[in-house]
Amino acid sequence: MAEENKFTVSIDGISVSVDPGTTILNAARQIGGDIVPPAMCYYSKLEGSGGKCRTCLVKVSKGSEKDPRPMPKLVASCRTTVMDGMEVQNITSPEVVEARKAVVEMLLINHPLDCPVCDQAGECKLQDLGYEHGSAKTRYEFERRTFERIDIGDKIQLHMNRCILCYRCVFTADQITDKRVHGVIGRGDHAEISTYIQGVVDNDFSGNVIDVCPVGALTDKTFRFKSRVWFTKPVQAHCACEKCSGKVTLWYKGEEVIRVTARKDEFGEVESFICNTCRFERKATSDWTIEQPTAINPASVIGANHYEQFQPPAVISEDEKLQTANRAQLLRTEKLK
Ligand code: SF4
Ligand code: FES
Image (cartoon, rainbow, N blue to C red; front, top):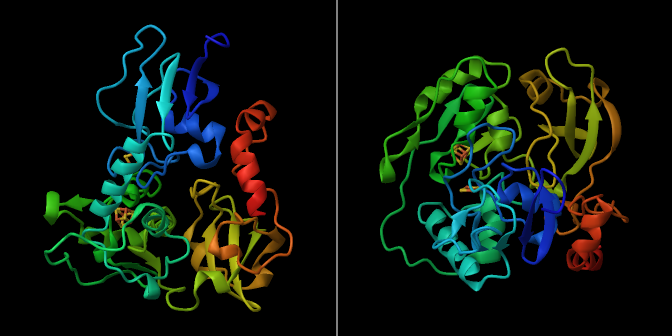
């Protein structure tokens, strides 16, 4: 062991020491950069999430120092904990890259190709995955599942056609709101987010289901069709909210705040959940104390033409040791700036 009470794991050749019990995905996140497996269902702020979408598959080429045998199959990195001396391959394994392509194809079987009219376009994890791993054509010959749109109160819309059944919104309603009134009903091809979700609107934190949804299945009706996200300017702001942290991102179109969301980290997860009052009711600049423009990853379409100089990308860990270890990633990201 490198450090006392720590396990050393190597991911794509980069070593990191982590606490026992850490998952491979979280160990990779400590390194940062493009060796971090994508995660469509795992969400670190939601207990029990993960294990549904299989986008985070990795290859364990050495089980541990004590038992170096490789794991016989690819494993979900969000659900597999590290062992001391473990060696993991993600982007360096052609097998993993091939399997991820198949997972993306599977996720897209029922997903409509409506990115041009979808509000999530530009910040959709499935769009990113499709771009990176998808193929231009589908081999699926059957009809896609289709559903009627459901209004969840006057602020949220569920467009079940786009849902990938990641369960994040179910966990959010269960853990963040007072009473869970929705879930997944049916199994396999019949599975869908239950219409009981409409009851969640009574709760002050129901809007968070929009932020956790990795695709455009749950959208903010106060923002729908107002602008493509790359025409907006995100700005960090806060207010003295009595119900939540009050730390948000305001999305401006010209002088108008057209959307309020929680702040998201480099893995697309909210930093803290926000209440519906902040999200839906505070749409005037005078409601907020403005901090600074939101740092956008230079690779993101949202940053297009916005700022002359970007902040250093958040994907680079501030830990000096890891920065040195992940030098290849550092150089790649520097080139993008
Ligand atoms: S609606 Fe969105 S968050 Fe909820 S299960 Fe479907 S994809 Fe996941
Ligand atoms: S993120 Fe691991 S299975 Fe979905």
